[in-house]
Amino acid sequence: MSSDSLQEPVKISIPRYVLRGQGKDEHFEFEVKIAVMDETWTVFRRYSRFREMHKSLKLKYPELAVLEFPPKKLFGNRDERMVAERRNHLERYLRNLFRVMLSSSCSPLRVDTDSGFHLSKHAICEFSPFFKKGVFEYGSHGTG
Image (cartoon, rainbow, N blue to C red):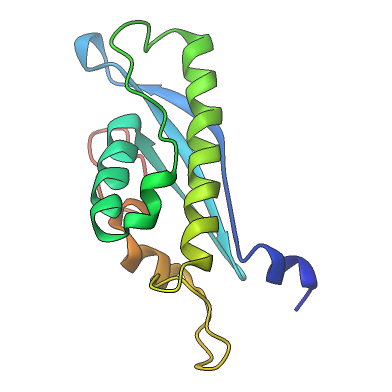
């Protein structure tokens, strides 16, 4: 195992976003790429799903309250510049989320070398359904 994977057990990024839906249902979905050990997967999520995840995790793990979550915008949320900025904020948020959770003593994601617990895709999906493929992914676009 390289020291790099010990440094950063979870690599998470939002490489891009896509426009989905039509008319008033038109919205952006962010591509979230997650890599843990030798597993890599991708999910597409709307901003509202990020917010729901943040709210529910904050209730369970008070230490996450310190994380800055990108604010909801009432206007201009389809503006390309705003969406690109939001992508950056969400990516930073997810990286900070994992940084906090991997070091928190009461986190289910904390790697415990004594018990031999290793982080896995399963552990992350158990931690939050946000990271599960297939959850929230419906519609004719097949955002799996």
